[in-house]
Length: 114
Image 1 (cartoon, rainbow, N blue to C red):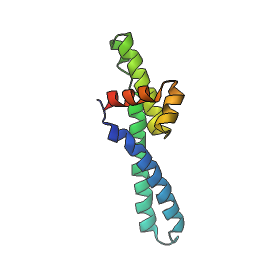
Image 2 (cartoon, rainbow, N blue to C red):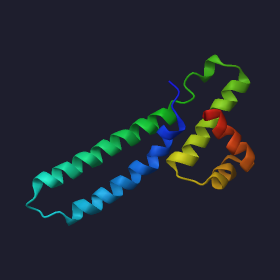
Image 3 (cartoon, rainbow, N blue to C red):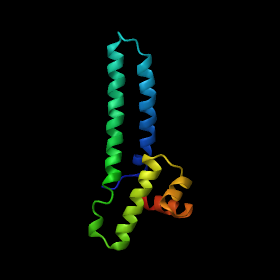
Image 4 (cartoon, rainbow, N blue to C red):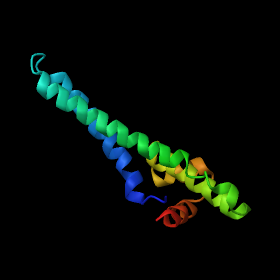
């Protein structure tokens, strides 16, 4: 199933939310287990959603063997783009650099995903 770009963009949000919740957990009174439990549940929910995104990126090329060489190459490019841009949190410029392509090509890959 093809995911929308916003699905992958949420990775950074969940990562930031986990860090904020961990700081919040550090400030919770040791006797307030109800609030601590709610915070830990929220952290677990965010981690589960991050795992879903990581799985979607990791399995992006699973159906590549059915395509021709160009389709397989494009899927591998898309997967590398998703890993660099959304999982590693790189800027578009750094993503392009990591992929050894121009910034314009990185934007073309993103448009393909959209």
